[in-house]
Image 1 (spheres, helix red, strand yellow):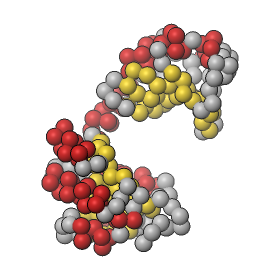
Image 2: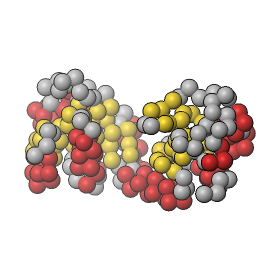
Image 3: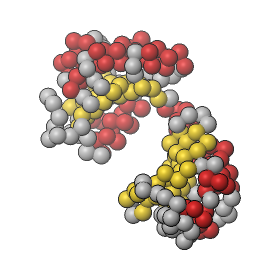
Image 4: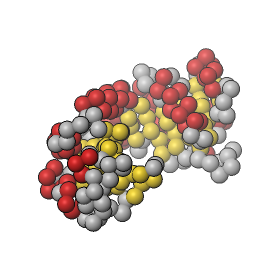
Length: 223
């Protein structure tokens, strides 16, 4: 199969709520998607899309080969409760040469096994919960990427109090122990941030640090 028009190819194995959400978002962003499930009903929402859809009876290497999943740049395994099938799908995708395999997991033991075979893991419910809680608490937040239980990267509207100040004058690192890694204006990111960079209230700041320090930054500005 190869790449379609040079586009990235994503495979989604298991199209429950998580897998379907991933597939639909990738399609919305113009990516080429191979969607695989054992249940034809689950795949129905994708029949009228540009996704290549396959119903398979098992997660064997042979069945996956028939779908062309080996040509995917990234495979997302959305199988959750059936841990054995999840691990088998990940293992077979890796052995077929897929460079990156990301798996939905439901427990630490599940995650531990997948990490050992070289897969990346995601706890969907945990990540959604973190993002929701932080965005509810931090009223300036535009988006957040939790990197661990303690550390995050956050996009936040530049506080009015910092408008017109340079990074050096704002003393972000000295006052809060966090790093400004980029600014975003009109959807364009600038990662060349230095001491003389001037901050503007109509920009988004991309900050990294511990959740405690990011919260301290948020609380320092009253809106």
